[in-house]
Amino acid sequence: MVSVYLSINVFGLFILDEKGKVTSKYLFYPDSDLAATNLMAITDETATDTIKGGLEGIEGNEIIVEDAMFARTISKIKNLNVRIEEGAALKWFRDSQDDYLIQAGITPTSEDISAFRREVALILAKKRVSAASEEKDLLIKNAIDAVDEIDKSINVLIMRLREWYSLHHPSLNRLVEDQVAFAKILDACAGKTNINKDCMQSVGIPDAVTEQVLKALTGDIGAELLDTDLAIITNLAKSVNGLLQMRTELEAYISTMMSTVAPNIGALAGPMIGARLISLAGSLKELARKPSSTIQVFGAEKALFRSLKTGADPPKHGIIYRVPEVNNAPYWQRGKIARSLAGKLSIAARIDAYSNRDVGANLRDQFISRVEEIRKQNPEAPPPKPPKPKPEPKKKRESRGRSKKRRGGR
Image (cartoon, rainbow, N blue to C red; front, side, top):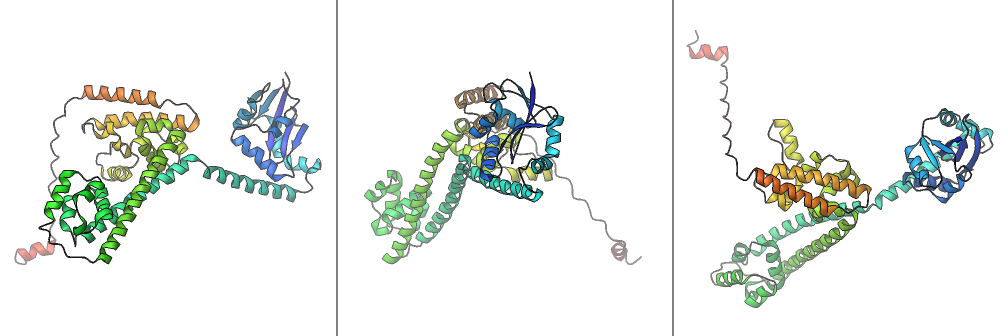
């Protein structure tokens, strides 16, 4: 079997013999777009028709390349035996490539070589930025970040509504604790004269709460507001309800995207928590690169750094605390359950990032089995640890002058 050396760069595809002599070539120069397209395809491990055409005639030979990614790309072509090796022929060609291009008449001057390399590099950078922007996990990251921003806005606006409307109807603020229900009431029936049983029931308020609100109306001491004042409050309540509706739509969108982009993570932790993990990591691939110990404390960075600084106990969990199996567990079991969940999430992230396998249900079953084992091992709470004794404050040493003054100056 004859060994041939294969080199690809911005100028084309070159086939060399053992002495480094070019036996055949397929040029990309002077088409910078063609060069960028083929090099971009190699990073995706995709063999283009141009690359396949340049490799015709060397089937049955042993092809030696330097780059592992290029080797994986061309190994997908039938009848090609590829080996990765840093051969002397490839090294010699790489070092003397500029001289070869000029001597062979491919490029006129070294300035043209540098200019073409720069042009292809710029095109590649633009293509990679565009490809990164099209990643679906970035859509998930922005969507879950939007949900968090909407939650902050809803909380601030409803607190403003409560304070504002309490000037007119203070008992409603006291009796209706649910934020969403409070905004719906103001949207449908703002004003004490508009509060009635039918209006309250139309927005889904329980009968017990409705009876309490109606009973408290007679003794309410709020000030009277003009219709224009109530109209402004109602419009603000409508805006809050619009944000709530948008949040519901974003949740549905995230669930759909997670079932496509990261189904295994979604099956383990739920789509919303899985999306927050992706957001905290920056992307799905970044999450896949993180160890399980990092995934376990994602969202608890402040507590982690505080423990490193002060020597306090490190946090046992971060955002994964919201998973029901962790949240509902006794406090002395949450650390082990969170560690088990983080390990499964680390596996799920790598599967979602680098393959198309759907093993979320299997990983979920394994996690639930581990939770049951932990609960059997520690069924009862351990006795509480006694608090550490506080160190006695050190007495400040009195200065020599002050001690003499107290002794009468002696």
